Length: 262
Image (cartoon, rainbow, N blue to C red; front, side):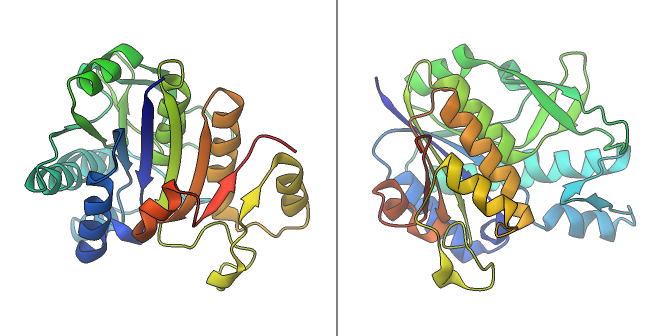
């Protein structure tokens, strides 16, 4: 099987031009087929506030009302996505920017929750493996924004970590997939304020222990849940760590490796 790197970049890296440029140079030099899934950083919030569109977050998730959906689509699938593609093209890396409706690559449904109305937030139903594989086989590097659709004309805002995990899981049928969550931290930390508290590896038993003792930062739990789900469904490896050390993550010299075995 051919190797495929699926790299998710987010956090403060998206908001820092110098850090993003350094990360993209490392991404561009990866010697395999690759897909980059990006988050939105803080730009969407800043623009929404400038437009006097109130923003509401619940447990780290954005409530996506009609006006907020317009903003996140413009920012995520527009400026951020095309800025990344333009930088990669400037590095002579042939790339294409996509979001869910393009070639029907990410089909989703509006999230249903009896307690909280998340608005136009989407939960993924299907990844179009054939379309993504066809583009990869044309030697294109794919840059995917966290916007999906429901197949009936409705755009949806979808969590980028989940998109990366679902694409990794789906593409593992055709490729040997490494899923890398890259952000500003050294990896999964025992103390979120102490970079030296990085956990080198986490298996399911250790993860349950860490959660039961409340030693995992709440914002990291969805990322880890997605990681274990991906491993259970055929992904070769999952690594979480610093975007500025992408090659060290790939080689196993940095970050936290998530393993399926006990």
